[in-house]
Length: 323
Image 1: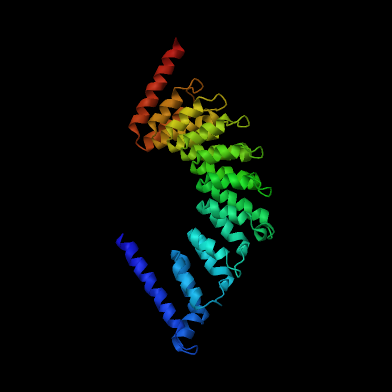
Image 2 (image 1 turned 45 degrees about the vertical axis):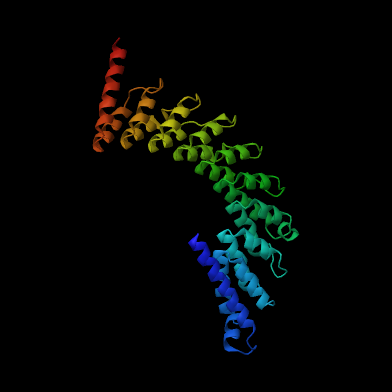
């Protein structure tokens, strides 16, 4: 509360300072330095845009109504957008000197990144945004940013745009959402027929398995176009995500013995006992030459519990085989 009071007091006195400058003669040194000289204007824009000081900008415009807000390639708009100050950006969009599609639809892409739904909807209605050069590229980048940040309403709005293609860049939007564990975004994207979870050898599933996002893994496995193979369980085993390993092992399409039991060998090397127990309990995992490599790696890393478990499991299988 104290910080807010100090900030309000500070802004109020800055506005008073600007108002007092307007009372000075037009040739006064201070007036020309602050209200006319371009580097000082850029410094003011940096200060306003960095912290979203809309009252200060309004006072500055009252003192100097001819101020060009598009200075330095719309520096103030770009900075306010990058910092996520929606109120300041909305105010700027009403100014005639501002081009809403400036810098390759920068405001639109930042609104998608920060999850500012109302601002994004307004920008999508702007003719200059729709008619800008390379609009399709900008819209797809906005979708990718929103998917990576988990902004479901933004994703829903962008998917309704005819220029948006969620399959662009080898399903980049799906990959971003899966990698960061955004379950709702992944579900929303998979409703679109253009989104293919099998793209780039099921990279979205691999990234979700690597990150331990078990709910995303479930959703991707439920898609009929998914044929996981062995790499998702390899990445999950290496990272020790036992819940993901359990879900993958319950799917008959997953091959836990791929690449000479690489999943079990990596789990042994990393010391993930729970993961190793899950893998060893699977009926398709059998003793073989791979076991020697697993022993050596576990011993080298001094994972005594892993070594003991592998020996016990091997003895059990030897007894069963003799019978």
